[in-house]
Image (cartoon, rainbow, N blue to C red; front, top):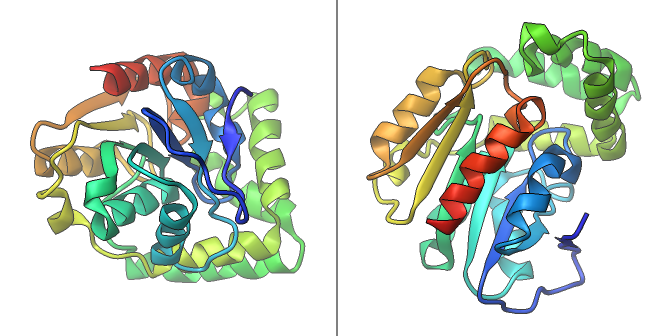
Length: 245
């Protein structure tokens, strides 16, 4: 991919146009493979490091420390939580905001037991069981028999590893309620959601769109939570328009 990776020891030089992509839980930069070619025509593309920290706030601080200047930021699911936290910590640094298949609401208490069980499985090296539990909820029913897509999603989980997955789950459970924050967002904002997303459904996306002044809501048909992979071209088009207009 023609992109730059943020590493803990490397600071990105300031450029006129920078875009930071923030992956979701158990995901790598492969999550955005279908958008990189289009987006890199307009911006220097970097990826946030979400593998080191066990809180959303710390993930956001790490990114702010590793990149100079102002930038657009886009995140999917957990990546969206990080993107909103970046706006909370340093609103003056953010030029554009894209929230993809995510929610501004805090984690519901009802999700805690499942998150802890999955973290335990992951830390014991049973990533295949973690994947088997998550896969039916990650993509639309029509994509659940797509073996190539499933292999890509599982490969990201393996690359992340059990310890990192557990840290990310801990971060998600402790995330802030960002609904009030979104009322203060004053930059071009795109909200994307798959119409069959059962993790962060259309209702959550609509709520965010209603909160952000002037936000653009794109509902992607025939896909679930991983819209950047399930409907790569459609999401790329929406993100390119957001980035350039």
